[in-house]
Image (cartoon, rainbow, N blue to C red; front, side, top):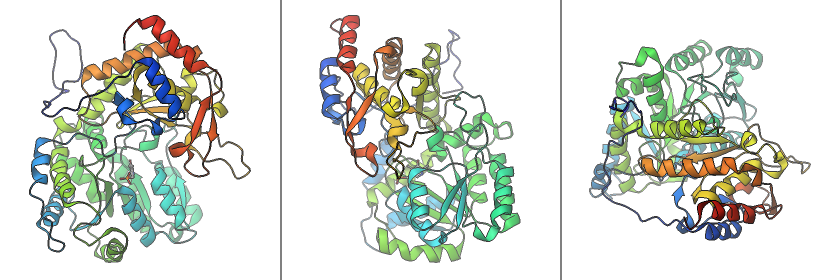
Length: 482
Ligand SMILES: *Cc1c(COP(=O)(O)O)cnc(C)c1O
């Protein structure tokens, strides 16, 4: 779609698919959205989907499947051992990644569990471009430590750096020198770095990381969960790969890694996970854990139907017109919000559009959860739900004080091929209205606060009657409109 030039001179993403199955959406009235938010304890995780107009909570397991994926699911082979479905997926992974060995897992974090159990020993270190929640948890659970070696640009919210997911090579070398290579369990590179806004690494950077690994005899592990977006950004932002095919770029990336793993809830547009390698010793070591934690070696906890869908989904990921859909819709949303003055992370990444809550509602103290309050306000204003990625998502310090997050973000995820451009325009319109009425938004506080992962289940309340006043202002401005 990026190759389309419009007569009007306008530029906007054009869907290269048509819709053949639809799901009816419900847009409740603003008064009902207010009630639903109160009932959900001001936590978007606790909203019932029947009350959600646009579900922008996550891109995990909710991307739209193609007709070919659905068709492939019908021919899945259920046999426990020797399943033809396993062979089809194994062959597809070998064709695309160039890896001989494939271990199936039920989802991405299950791959992380197994890799960590095999490679992370107590007091070892895993350097990485940035952590992901589940990756870090499994490494620390096995007694290891995460060291983030990101570049200075990574945490700069307003940037034009094309590859904020790059690893800082000097910092990596310094770390290895200081700690000694024998203390490094492996080096982890995450494609489409999730927690800093779906930001990519460049192939040039990955090659440098590989050189450091070679010089120090270290394993390089690639988290390819968000690889599709990263492929698109390499092709469109890295000059040396302008003419390269997505397939060739993929192969160059996976050839540099010793182990490639991913969540098929993201990569492959289905549900499941995988670990791929050419290292026979690693394969043999990890294999035992598959049967222990996941299932037999030919399905690893996945349904064979999903495995068929992954094989086709991976093939479709090699199609540039398919994988550019997500990033281009996100870029559109980001640019439209910027035009209206709304503070958003730049450059636009994969995964979703990220709103800077500290700049949106600067009058709310961090301890009053500005990103949580903004996520609730966006739902009340639009019926769209995003996810808080700020202090609410952190865990308190041991002494009970708040651990204030580096960034206060609301992530509006863009599940792939799910929304039309007019729906994206709608949510931009409502967020712009909210921005013009931002002084109405105030803080929220916990009424039920779990000790771990409080953002999933915790219940909160508004610290004043601001949600009622916000809903009333909406009614005043929009009349009878939904
Ligand atoms: C989602 C994700 C995971 C974990 O995958 P699950 O399938 O949710 O367990 C790991 N790494 C990254 C980068 C992810 O985005």
